[in-house]
Each structure stands twice: as C-alpha cells, then as structure tokens.
Amino acid sequence: FRTLKSPQTFFLPADDDGEDDAMDAESSNNNNNPNQSSKTILHNSKTSNKLLAITPHLSGHVVGGCYWVLKQLSDDTEIILAPTYHHAKEKHLAGSSLHKFGLNADALLTMPGGARGLLGKLYKPPTPKDKIALKGIIKYKGNRPVLAPPLGNRSEAELIESIMAALRRDGNVLLPTDASGRVLELLLVLDRHWERQRLGGAYNLCWVGPMCLNTLEFARSQLEWMAAPLGAQFDSQRGHPFALKSVKICSSIGELEGVIERSNGNPTCVLASGASMDHGPARDLLVRWGNNPDNLIMITDSTRCVPRGDVWFKRHGSRGAAGIGGSDKQSAAKENESGLIVGNKPILTTATSVVEETTETTTEETDGSALMALQSSDVSAYTTSSQLLYAWCTAKAANQEMADEVAVDVHVPHRAPLAGEELRAFLAGEEEERRRLRVEEERKAMMKEIELAR
Image 1 (cartoon, rainbow, N blue to C red):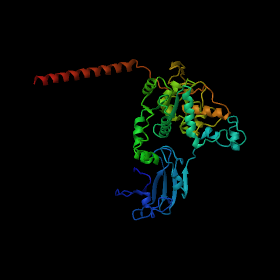
Image 2: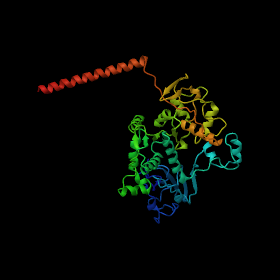
Image 3: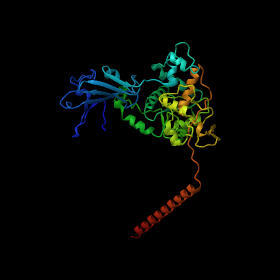
Image 4: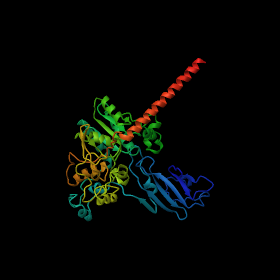
C-alpha cells in the first residue's frame, strides 16, 4: 500500500525495481498550469510504459477525505470516483475541488447527497409514485414538499438558536457525534459562539469521549489540510484555532459530572461520541437525561440513523428464532441501510426504553428514569438515533409536532455478579496474586538486609 498526498499521482503498473511511481499531478502536466483541467495527458519518459494514473484530490466533508481521478493513459479516458464530497466552505475545511477537476471527466461515479429515506421525502416535491406509496404516511399539500429545504447559510444559526433555547430553560443539550470527523466543525462553531458571547460562566460546553484528546492532538497537526484561514491564524501567532478555550474535554461521564458539579449545576451542552446512541457516552447521557422534558437531543448526522445489522445482533445475542420483528421487518431494514425505512410498518417498538440481555420483563430506577427490560423479540432493528429521527419524521409528515414522550430501546449492557465456579476461580486467582506479592516483598527485604550487612 502507498500513501498519497493530494494531488500526487500514482502510476500503474508499478515498477518491479521499487522505483517511486508517484509524482505531483501539477509537475506531471506538460504546461504545469494548475488552473487547467486534469484532462491533460500525463506523458513523459517515466510514464511511457504506464497504463493508469490515479490522483486523489480533496473532497471536503472530513479531514483527509478525497475523491479519485482515474485516467487511462492510452486514450486519455478519465473516470472520477467520488463517494463523498462537499462543495461548501466551512470553518475547518475549504470545500471540494470537484467542480474544477471534474469538468471534463468521461464518467462520474458517486452517490446522491442529502437526506434519504423518509427524512429525504419530507424535503422533496412528491412524485405521483410517492403520493401512492406514502399515502397515509405523509400528508402532502399539492405538489409542495412538507418541509422547506434547509438553507446552508442558516443551518449554523438555527443550530445555535436551538441550543441556546434549551440552555435558557435550564435544560441540558446532547449532540451525538462521531469520534473524529464532523465533530471538528461543530467544535469550532460552538467554541467561537461561546467565546464571542462570553457564555463560559453561565453554561458549560463539553466534549466527551475516550478518544477526544487524541483526536484534538491529531487535528492540531493537520492544519495544512484544512481551510486556509485556520493556517493563517496560526502563522500570524493569533493562537491555534483548535485551542478550544471554551470547551472542557472529558474522557468519561465521571469527568463530565465533575465539571457540572464544579459549575454549581449550570446547564450543559455536550458533544458526545456515539452518533447512533447505541454505544458510548451519547448512549449513557441519553439514559440519564432522557426523562427531562427541558433537555434537548440534536441528531447531527442522519447518515448514522441506520439498521443495527446482523453484527450487532450476533454480538449481543438478541436475535430470536423468528428474527427481530419478523423476516419482513429485517428484509425491509436491509433494503434501507442508507436511510430510514419508508414502508407501512413502523420501526418503533411500542413500549421500550432500555434493552437488557434478559428474557424476563423487569423495571428499575436509574437516575430518576424508569428502565424497562425487553425480550429479544421486541428489540428494534434500528439504532436508537434512527428511532428518534423516525418519530420526528412521522410527526412532521402528519403536520404535527413531535410527541413529548417517545419510546425507544437502548442497549445498556449489564453483567451479572460472579457466582459459583467463576467466583471460586476468581478468588483463587486473587489469593495466588497476593501470595506472589508477599513472596516478592520478602525477597526485596532480604536483599536489602544483605546489602546493609555488606
């Protein structure tokens, strides 16, 4: 495997003698004009025996994201492979250059952007086929979409307005995020708002996750691949853009509780790892904060609202003989892996709050919220974030507001205390370890006495 930096070009087939086949795309062009399309044939003495040129270019969306330009050198056929890209300029990324290098491509392989599934249907004008398939699910008014398409220049302002509204009513805000991708953009947006409005004394802004410090250290060393204003800020000695002075970084929920306690219980906005809310700090905070109507949960990435999949059910042993909700439900989930299901069967279970690995229905109190265990056949085929988003979509499809109470299932792992043979084996191991430590201490004491005697 080779590591390429945009816009280096790698030529195939590679030389057997280990000669480096990568070069800068600009230097390989005959006229060395960076503004010219990459349609220029790459021919020189080094590439005369090559068949294919591969060049990565920055695609935006996440740090390190790229799209690929594949060029057949024999006839200059050019294909662009762009699975994910984002044209807009953001706080930490400059946006994709696809509009520059993809003008004269012979083929573009990509996937449609924007929301999919039921969420995407709310923002698109209905087709005759949609009106028939979604009858009884979405109430269309003529040929207009149910919701107005979101404006890019308003999304940041609407995000901040929603967060501040919840904090001002003494509620907490949970933003489930990925561990190292789009969370960087959210951090810059919220940190700058906290700095400008000087909100640190009234509201906490926290980032919770086991890899937060590692992600931040990585981001600080990758400014060359981010937006030019961030590099200019660093070069002009105005401080590092990822100093994040208003963000309190916590590696665990325990550290977050300490931050809230030291601030005398100030309302807190938390970016928590675990975008699907099936794992990580985001799941734990959902269980703790989900029973308070003043709190707010904002789903930051609808692409994480997907089916749980066979891997999840095999890992947790929750699939019954009849499947999860039946074979029809599981097959529908597989057909809609990239978005929410758009069928006549709801993906929400009727009375679920927490999933435990048990076959008996029990109820317990945890931080003031009632948790109800489920049988394996009652577990939803979709992640927790999918269930919440689907509840919001169905309410909007009916021209209503989302219900005050929404039942979802959350996987909360519980381990039973050691008992029987396992407990005896554990105690025997502990006793053996204590004997070993005593012997080691006696040996050190004896060696010390011998040394003193000399």
